[in-house]
Structure formats: C-alpha cells, structure tokens
Length: 466
Image (cartoon, rainbow, N blue to C red; front, side):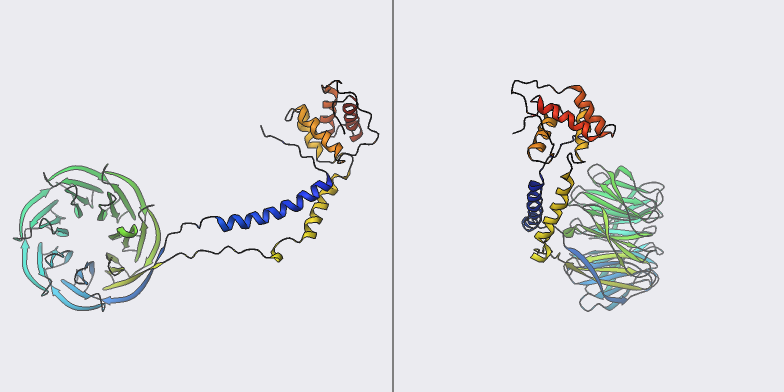
C-alpha cells in the first residue's frame, strides 16, 4: 500500500517555507558538492605511434630483450631474424636461420636466442652477442612455438605435426624428453615455474592441456575457444589468457580450479598476446583486424583498440621504456607505440554566484502562485485527502487533525462555524461524514455538503478549533 500523507499549510506559512526551502536546497547542493570526496578515477593510457620499422619478409613474432634494449623479429618469408636497436628504432643486423622460422625465445641470462624453423624441423641457436648461429638442433616436427626457462636451462618446443612437446637441455643443446599427447595440434605453451605446470593449447581441439612437469603427465584439459593460437600466464593473479583465433575471443582460465572464468570478445583472428602486470593490462594482436585490443584484466573488458598494421601478429612490451611493439605480418614492418599515461584531471565544482540563484522576488512569486491555490473554502487538493480517508488509507485521527489545522490556519475559511461542544463530547466520527468525504472526492456531492459534515464535527467537539 502506498502511504499518503496529507499536507496542510496556510498561505503565509507556505510562502515563507517555499522561500527558505529553495534557498536551502541551492546552498545544500553547493556544500555537498564541495565536501564530497573526489571520484577515484584511474589513469588512462594513450598510445602514440612513434616509429614504423621495415624488417624481414612476413614477421610472425617480435621479442624484446630488456637487458640489451634490442628487439628481434622472426621473419617467416625471409628465413631470418631481424635485430632492432630500440633506442634508435632502426635495424642493425639480419641473421639467416633455417627455413620458415615461426618461433623465437630468448634467454636473457645467457644472451642466447632459439629459433624454431618449421620447414627445416630444426631449432637454430644464436649467440646474440655476435648475432651468429652457433648450433642447430634437430629432431622436431614443425616446431612452431617455444619458451625457455633460464633457471632450469630447459627449452620447451611444441611439435605441431607431432602432437608432442620436446624438452631441450640448453647446456648441451640436446632433446632429452618428448611429452606425447596423441592426436592433437600443440601450437603454443606457457610455463608456471611456481607450480611446475606447463600449459599447452591445441589448435584443432580447442583445448588447453595442463602438464605436471614432475611426471610429464597431462593432469587436466580445459575447453577454450575455436582454434586457440597463443597463451600467456600471469602468475601473480593465477590467471591464463588464451587467444582464440577462430572465435575472436580470449578465454580467461583460473589456474587454481582449471576452469574458464570469463570470455572476452576482441578483434578478428587474435594472434599474439602479452601482459603488463604492473598496470593490469593485456594486449592482443588481431591479425585480420590489423588492431591491438587492450584488456583491463581486473574487469576482463576491452578498454581500448589500437590501430596497428595489416596482419598484426606477434606483440611484445618493454615495461622499462613503456613501449609496445607489434609485428605486422602483411606489411613487413614493426609498429612502435609509446604508451603515455594520462592522469585524470579533477573537475572543479563551480560555486554559483548571485546571478545563478533564483531572485527573491521570483521565489516569492512562486510561493504566491502556490498560495493562490488555497483561496477556495476547501482547496481542490484536499479532495485527495478526503478520498484516502474514506478508503481507509489514512485514519480518523490523522484526517481530523489535518482539517483542524486547516481551519485554524484559515486555509479552510468556513463561514458560520457552530460553537464547539465541551471536551467530553463524542469523539467518534460518524460513518455518514466519512461517506460524504468519499462522495465529495468522487464528485458525487457538492463542496457545501462536505463542509456541512466538517461543521458537524466542530459542533460535536470532534474537531477542536482554537
């Protein structure tokens, strides 16, 4: 039931209240605005292209060495690795490797790079101090992705055609183990060194497999999106991000429960991924869109889309210089973005001047217009109260007290009021008076007939008028 509260005010009192109420509201709004704490707005990132670097043919990936401030692209069509000076954003060397290289990993401790040559079924070992190939490891089947662990001196290589992952001892450059999965297409992998788990994604089955490296056994499999293509781990949040090239999404995996907890829509054919844990951001290169999706990993939402080049594929971040590098496969270039942090500007709340506040004469005019409504014997708005009383929404006491106030304040100026009875008079309101109120509210009887009922209540002392 909706509670209806009768409002009974005299014209003079209404005029005074209206004036002070409006002024109070204006002042209160200003004061509240001044003393409310500023809204907590996070700093935003702006992305500015500062260079476009021509590299080898069909750059499939880019890796940054933060120690030497150099970047390396693996060029599928050029059978090469391009070396970029990140200070000058210029190419300083080109290293020839095997046929159709598609994977690249760098051990920053030893300054050694490993390149997976998918057509040669080999891995080229490069000394990055001299930019020369110092060894070639064989025994792979389409080695299309790899990661290196500098602490254990282990290199993990996916064999896309072989349905397995090869484990290489980088101190001897020999394959020491092959973890087989059967009929699958392992295309990318990520290692969690804290839990000693390896995550491998299958491009055909749309799954992520979890491998316990202490036993080299698959302990779980997780359904992700269509044709997953790259994977990256944030060990601080225990989350894994899988870019699904076929479905244009990123699957977010909880590494505690091994379940997908969210799916994020990104651009077309997402390819490479990288993370900036310090800012809770993930970057996804969308090869068919030629864009990079920026994901807020606290909300798992895309907060920005950056225009890159055609075939935006591999992507890397240099957190020390706050720059983003995108390998554009179809343009043979690398786009360099300067990430500029834009701090939010606190908006000042203007304090209204005298000209912004309603002039007093206007406030009085407004109060005068309201008070004019109550110049009839019984103001029209009291019909609502009479109707609510008749249907029981308000009780006898509330209605009687309200009418009593209206008469005392001359809002209801009833002529020829009878003398009221003693205090011992009857206090119960007769049913016919209440019926009259309802009929008057419905327009069945006239105002005079309703007023006669009020006079009766005064006469009986039910309404006491001073």
